Amino acid sequence: MLKEKVLSVRLREDQLEKLKEICKQENIMTMFVLTNRSNTSAFNLYEKTGGIPDAAGDEVTFVYHNFD
Image (cartoon, rainbow, N blue to C red):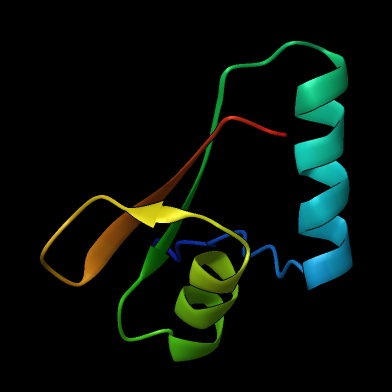
């Protein structure tokens, strides 16, 4: 029987802000993270830190632009 393993990375707010800082330093224009709308803690974190949700269903991509 095949068992699938899913890698789950849980970001804290300070880690996400550090990633945004690195994007700015490296002139990266866009960053994105994936989550599910039903994962309310991740959804709220990404929204709080300036991510823009790009989906209407449960699977959501949060896009970050302009790392000023």
